Length: 114
Length: 119
Image (cartoon, rainbow over all chains, first blue to last red; front, side, top):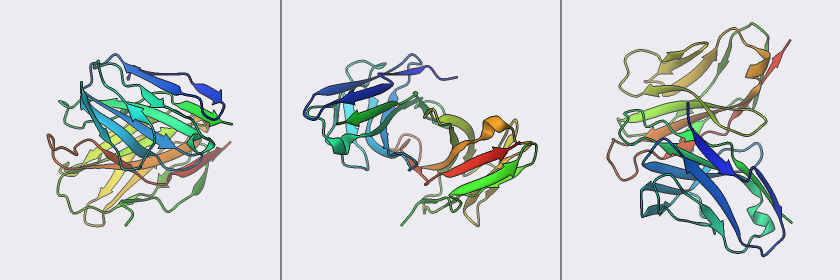
C-alpha cells in the first residue's frame, strides 16, 4: 500500500496565475516522478528526481519546474498558467533499492486553466 | 516507434467471465520490467502486477495474471472472474535498463484499454 498524497485534487484557475501542485510521500522513497495525462490518453513523464537536489526533465517537454529539497516532497510549479496546461498531473514514487522499482501513484490533480 | 502498444481501445466482458487485455512491447534491452496499472474514473493509478524480463514464471496476483511471451514480446493481462468494479482504463507500462543506471525507473506507457464489465 502506497502513501503518496497530492493537493489540490482539483484546481480551476485563470490564465497567467502562478500555481504549485503539491506531492508528498511518507515511504522514504528516493525516486519521485511527475506525469501529465490528457483525458483518455497515456501518461507522459515530465519530471523525475532520484533524490534530494536531483531533478531531471522527462520525455515530454513541459513549461513547469520542480524542486526536491526534502526526500518526501516534490512540488511542481507553473509560473504562468495557460489553457494548454489543462490536464491531469500525477505524481509517483518508487524505492530505488527494491528490485522491481514499482512506481506508486498519488490520486492526481486535475488542472483547468481558463 | 511505439515502445508499448495496446491495440484494444475498448473491451467488454460479462460479469464473472475472464478477459484478456493485450500488450506488446518493443525493446532491445535484455533487462526490463513490465507493469499493469488500473485507472478508475476517479483518476488514480493503481498498480496491479509486475513481470521482470528474467522471470521464468508468469506473474500472478489474485485474480490478475500476466501471460508473458518473451519471444513474441507480449505481456497480456488476464483478469479472471470479472467484477463490476473492474470497469476502468488499464495501462501497460515498461521500464528499461539495469538497476543503478541513470535512466532506470522511467516508465513508458501504452495508450490504454477501457474495460467495461456488464452485469
